[in-house]
Every structure is written in structure tokens, then in C-alpha cells.
Length: 317
Ligand code: XMP
Image (tube, rainbow, N blue to C red):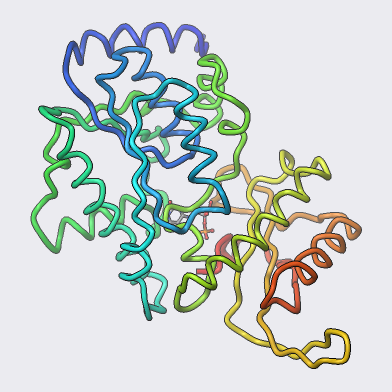
């Protein structure tokens, strides 16, 4: 019978044997998989594990700082890299979703490669790949597709020539969570909703600007905090706000406004392949809507997405 305790014990032993005194680089995303992989490796090889956490400027409000702090608190040897400008400038004026994904994938690879070069004599690349990623290429929109499309354009970045170690590649998501719990990783990280690699860039329909990111971060933070306060966060599989590229008329005092729309999305799902929209209670939706419209400058209307997957997808792009 599979148990998380036994998995942790045998995996740490075999990682020690496999890696010896070698150096390993790993890209942390703030997500469950890369976090669990990092802690396992850290227990096996300590500071020979060099973690890299890239701020692409497309994360949720305050996430880079709070997640980085959490990782440092867990004792990881981690380097945080502020690459906000680099991502935003490359995205300027780009509207097509797949184009945005390609750019973000490419810039991530460039930034990660630069950071990996700074780790002297590194020989391994660790990844948080889990079993479902191995058996199927889950989505054409997934990060592996981005990396593949990169392969086709240029030569391999240097870090991709490293030997690969993937300690979670036999596990399903719920097993990864159980392993994380055994390792003592906090609920703050283990219980978080899935978040796409391209981040808020695919929740801002059309072109991405620093202003739109800031507006969406504010609205999203209000949304997520209210879900947490209402005790609903853990019942929802994934939630997030979306910035719609339309303006609509409103009134504020005696003034006519003409501002953007925020859409709220919340779904129930098992694996993201199919999903149902969540029947969030009206009073909670009302509070979120009021708060967003009152506090977020540039937004005068909030709508709720009542589409399931299929035929809609979870993300709008
Ligand atoms: P869709 O929108 O296809 O999303 O129903 C299914 C799940 O995949 C996530 N998603 C992505 N994750 N890179 C990622 O790492 C991407 O480009 C990407 N696109 C969608 C989405 O958030 C949901 O959990």
C-alpha cells in the first residue's frame, strides 16, 4: 500500500544516492508540485539544491513576496529574480493568447537560463513533473508545449542540457498534496488553487499593460480574500478575476463613467479537464462586486461567468 511517509523516506534515500554531492537547479513557481519537489530535494541534498523563483510581474497581488518569504522560511536555498520589466516589455502590444504564451515561455527560459548559469558546476535540472504530465500532454496550452515550441526555433538553452531529476513523476496530484503534508509544507502553499504559468497575462484579454495588471491584481485580491473570509476558498477548485477589454457606461455620484468590466470565475473540477461553474452564494457575490467597484479605480461593472467546461474553458484565453 502506498503511504506518503514511506514515499518520502525511500525517495530521499534514492535522491541522496542518485545525486551524491552534485548541484541541482530547480524553478519554483509557488505552486504545489514545484514546492513539494523542492522540499524533498532539500531534505536529500540541502544547499546543493539551488532554487530559482522568477517574478514575471503576472502573479497575484503580493504573491511573489509572500511566497518567497515562505520558501525562505522553509530553509530553501532560493534566489528571487525580478524580471517584471523584461516580461512586460516583451508583451507590449501583443493581443493573441498563444503569442502571449510563447513570449512568456521564451522570456522565462531566458531568465531561468541566466540564473542557472550563475550556479557554478551545476549538473542537474529538477522538475516538479507529476504522473499525469508524463502520460499525456494535458493541454496544448500547457508549459511543456511552450518549451517544445522553443526547441523548434533555436538551439537548446544550456539548462536543458542538464540531466533531469523528477522525484514526483509517479504521483497523482492528491498524492503530491499528501507528500507535501508529510513534509510539513504549510496549507498556504499546499491548498492553493491552480494558477496558469502565463499568469494574469491570459486573464487580461487582449494586450497586457502594467496598469491593467495593477487593476486586475486589486480586483482579484478582493475576490480571493472574500472567498477565504466566507470559508469558500477550499471548496472551489480554481477561482480568479478576469479583465475584460470592454468599457461600459456607469454612474458615480452625478458623473457618468465609462470604464472596464471585471469578470469573476470560479469552478469545481477534479483535474481541470472538465469543470462546472460554482454556485457561489449571492450575498458573497454582492459583497465582492461592491468592494471591487468601490475600491478599484477603472472598474464600474462586475459580472459572473456561469459557463461550464466544455464547451467553455476555465481560462478565457
Ligand atoms: P483551460 O482554460 O484549458 O484550463 O480549461 C485548464 C487548466 O489549465 C490551466 N492553464 C494553464 N496552465 N499554462 C499553464 O501552466 C497555460 O498556458 C495554461 N492555460 C490554462 C488553467 O488555469 C486550468 O487550471
